Structures are given as structure tokens and as C-alpha cells.
Length: 454
Length: 169
Image (cartoon, rainbow over all chains, first blue to last red; front, side, top):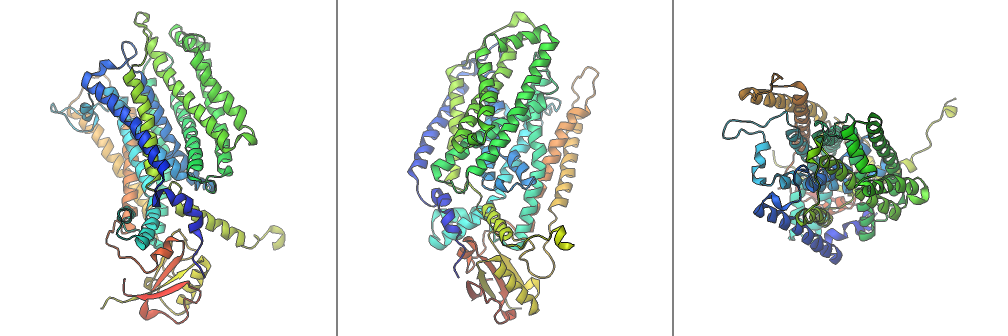
């Protein structure tokens, strides 16, 4: 009797790890160069001070805070979606979870950089850490910025561990294969280290499954708290169109919405680039597409509620920001946002023919652009028109800010390229477990029905 | 007592492994003398007969959460009172803002305790674990059962893909 035939199905998945894929290496280099642009631009800013950025009175938060909110939102793609699917035992989650969890870790890492970039003097970031300075002063825990630090720190810690825990059994699989084939190789040693001695005993599986379930339950409220707190950076002020009670859920919904968008794009590229059609199949895209439609409707509802309430109240300073968006300087980008965030997703993904891999990826890409615009309109749209009219100002980003924006996308892609070459982007053991459950269900006898009992 | 040798058998299907475990139970082999390894969680479907495996992860998560939340609220309270900032008559430690930090501390404590408990129960990290005889087959999806060699009944591994007595354990 031969061993189970998992190896044939897994060959495509493991090819980037066990072999050399020139496309992946080239991709890593190109995106690495873009990531270099981020650090070059940031280095230039550190050397020449924050004045090289386009931010100025009254727009003190420009691209940097827009990018911060955007990337923290993207991070909701992974851990939150993965945790929700795990808690609800959605079987189709199995090929999706790791793609998603990796997105969270990388997006959070990048998002966390932006407050440091915005700080101008990043070496002073430790003022936010709960540690007394030379005058015995501790951080002001009443400040939403300290809440940000705590929330993002917790979410990043949780997300990294939530990614690494389920990775242990896969690293053991890679270790055992590498040790059998090339025991002295660097990869074999690396996989041995990363597996941490995992052996797959009954007790280990039981503890790991219990740990993953508990982590999934904890990480959901943490993820919600992160973007709620990010929204409170804005809504705790009295600025026009920021001081809103629904900003917390509005931001959380927007975060999950943009998260699903980037997940669909990433999954489509992985499917095409690595030949993972067997894992990331049409059913997965169909289900994600349905989830996406639901979030399109929820996001549209929140956006409408936010604007209709302001319009009905007709408070002059709020209306100045409102008209600027709807028919003023930012009307084009505002209605463009509505087009890519509401009209196109509903027009395409509401129908089964639209929930195909390519279509969902295109729609997801559009939503990414739309959600970035949404964050820009919230941040800059309000700051340009503060309550005191004599401080009305304009904002246009400098090449440093543009370089950092482009570089952040490059860094995200580079981290993803590197991760794909280091670990299975689809969880081997979870997919195997799914196959086993499906096989057991198919082999089991018909369930006893009420009629049979009679 | 000398270090006993173990006999390993690899099974392609969980049902075959289950049959082998049932034969071991019929022969009176205790669960402590059997080790089952697999590349997927088999749960109670394929499990050595005897005391079931258990985990204290949920309990430790709750305790970790309580500990983290307590530390966070102490941090906010004690540090704010150590150097009171002028607040214009408002409380030095307002509960709504302290609540945010407390929640994050609670979650962080629960997460760290969960992971620490998983590692403790799994006896990880262990970087000096010797390779087993069927690790490669295990990686390909087989289920490996190891039994203390002096307790191996005849024909217990009748449906095994491979068997090997070893001194590796």
C-alpha cells in the first residue's frame, strides 16, 4: 500500500519553496527596489526635516495619516476574516486563511511605520512607550495616540502569533521532506528551526487546535478595537465631519471592505502566478465575492448615513466640507470613489457570472483605490476647511510623500513575494484536514432520519 | 530501567491506524505506551485508548486576560497619579480612557498566555528531537504509531505500509 497521494496535489504549492522560480526572484527584486524608494524618501526627509513634505497649516495630516489609516484597514483582510471564518467553521476558509493572515502582518508592519514617518523625528517614538522619561513623566493614557500604540501593538503581536502557530505543522512537513532529501542544506536547517521540534502527536494537535480557536475568538474584538481606535483619532475632535458617533463602525466596515479587496487581488495573483487553481478555485472566489457584496452594501449604507445626517443638520462648517466633496474641488474623486466602491461591485459581483477570479480581482483592485480615496477625503477634506475660516488652506503632496506611498506598496509586495518563497501560502495541514473530513463524510453511511426511526 | 526501544508502523489511512490501535487495546497495551503522530489533527477518531488528551488553553487564556487587564489598569492608574497633569477639574484617571488601555492589556495577556500554554503543552520548542524512521511518510500524510517494543502483540500492524523496530526513542 502506498503512502497517501498528497505530494502530487501539493507540488504546485511547494514549488516556490523547494525550487527556484525566476519570476518570484525578479518580482522580489523589482518590489524590493520600490521598497528602497520608501526608505530613500524617508531618509531624505529625516536628513532635511519634515518641511520637505507637503503638509502645512492647516493640513497637518496629509498622505502619511491617509496611508496609515489605509494600511491599518488593509490589515483587517487577514486575521479578522480568517478568525471569523474559523469561528464559524466555514470549510471554504482552508485555502484562504494563510494568504489572509500574511496580508495582516505585512500591512500592519507598513501601517505602523507611518506614524513614525509622520513624526519627523522617529527616534523620539519611545515617548509613546509606557516608560518614564527623564522627568519622570509617563505617556498620557488619555491620548488617542497612545491608544493607537497599544491597540496596534496588541493586534500586531496577536496577528504574528496567529500566523506562526498554524505554520508549525507545515514547517514540520517541510522539515521532514528536506531532512529526507538534503539533510545538510540550509533550507533543511531553517525548516527544522522554524518547526520548533513539532512532531504531530495527539497531544500537540489537541493543544494547537485549542490555541488556534481561542486566538480566533480573542483576535476578533482586538481587530475591531484597532480600527475603532484609529477612527477615534478623528472623531474625538470637534472637526467638521469627523465628530461622528458612527465613525467607529464606519471605519471597521471600511477596513474589512478594503481588506477583502486586497485579499481577492492577492489570491488571483497567487492563483495565476503559482498555478494554485486546485486550491484557490472558483468556489472560493464565489464565496468571497458574496461576502464582498454584503460589505459593499454595508459600506454604502454607512457612507450614505454619514453624509445625509450632515446634510440634514446643515451646520455651516460641516456643509463646507460636505459641498467640497459633493460638488467642489474633490467632487471628481468623491464620485469616482462611489463608482468603484458601490456601483461597480454591485453591478459585477451581484451576479454569479461576475464572481469569477479575474472579475473579483479587478473589482477588488478598484475598491482598494476607492478606499484610499475615502481615507484621503476624510483626512485632507476636513483639515482643509476647519471651523475657523481664516485658516483655510490647500494641500498637495511632495515627491517625498509620493515616493513613500509608492514605496509602501512595493514593500508590501516584496514581503509577500519573500513569504511565498519561504512558507506554503496555503496551509497544507488545513487543506489535508478538509480533504480528510470530506472523504469521511462521503464514506459515512446515510444519517438516520426520523422516518427510519419510526 | 534501560531506555526501551519502540516499534513504529506507518498507516496510509486513519481507519487502518484505528484498527491497529484497537488491536493494541485488545492486547492490553496502555495508552502511555503508544504514541500516535500525524500531519493532520485526527481528534478522537484516531486516539490511543485510555485517558484522553486534554488542554488547559481556554482556562489559561482567561487567567492571562485577567492578569493583563489588571496590569494595564494598574499601569494607567499608578502612572497617572505618580505625576498628575493639570486636567481642569476632570478626573486624573478617567474610566472611559483607562478602559481602552485595560481592554488592550486584557487581550494581550490572553494572547500571550494562550501561546505560552500551547508551547508548554506541546513541549515546544525542542530543537534536539531526533528524526523518526517514518518522518518522510508522515510528511506525505501517513499516520505513524509507535509502541514500546516489549509490548508489541503479533499482527497488530497488519495493515501498515511499513514497520520498523528502532532504538531512536
